[in-house]
Length: 375
Image 1 (cartoon, one colour):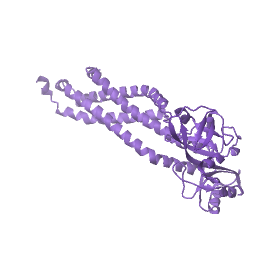
Image 2 (image 1 turned 135 degrees about the vertical axis):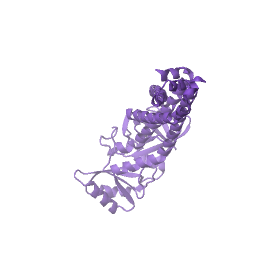
Image 3 (image 1 turned 90 degrees about the vertical axis):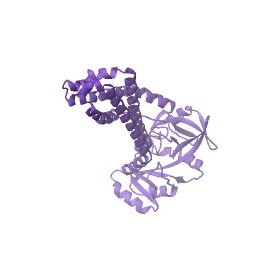
Image 4 (image 1 turned 45 degrees about the vertical axis):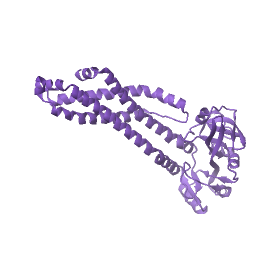
């Protein structure tokens, strides 16, 4: 095949071009997989701790970057409200943890193990860890469950003792689904979390479970009217609020880097195709002299671009899984979650860039005349 023979005339240059395309594809795949990991990890705590209603301080719509403080008095009113089956208080606070390498920050969630559907020591809990992947859940004020990525990064094992301020807590388990990329969750009892903040009787929010048959919207409206200074959200709305907050702070960065990668990919293909046309100018002139139609010459350019982009995409698809595993091993807080849909999406972008690069380059064919074959 003539387009392939042209590329093989310069094997080093062709290999470098395929490598450049592969790096751009890997970059886009990495950004998408990191985004998916952050998107799911940031809100998995909310997804798994499903509640009929979330009660927070007024004008607070999320827990990712929102600040909410309620008192135990709100909990008393909620528990006395007819139609409410369970009220689970949660206190979320940033705490400094002493590690061997220095200080680290942990997003501690204090909850009441007594509100766990399975009881203390079980993975399922109202306001507690979404899932326990090693060890058990907390059952006492002196215990803590760490996010597994945080534990691996700082070399912690079940049974270790960590220092938080002046407190010493025993690690009794590791949780999964609690890595929010820039911060990781830790879980302890509500009483211990209140002691860490120095404000007993303070909570961030209440997770409310309703009795069967109680209308959720009516209860949400009634609670908002009866409790001054609070916001009440159903689970779907509260989850969407947190997703929106996560995207507003993270997506613009990804878009900018992905756009840069697309521009680089376009430049690589366009420049190489332009060089190939210049080097093969006499060959193209001969083809025109023997009557080759313009669509045949344009087809050669298109095929060369497709071969380069296909080669780069294949190399990237093979290299990405081990590369992602290496990055996660070096930086446990980075979570990559790739899917076939992401690969198809990136392949579609690469195909679009390929077609555009070939189209923008083939205009150079207009300046090639048949008489040049006899020059």
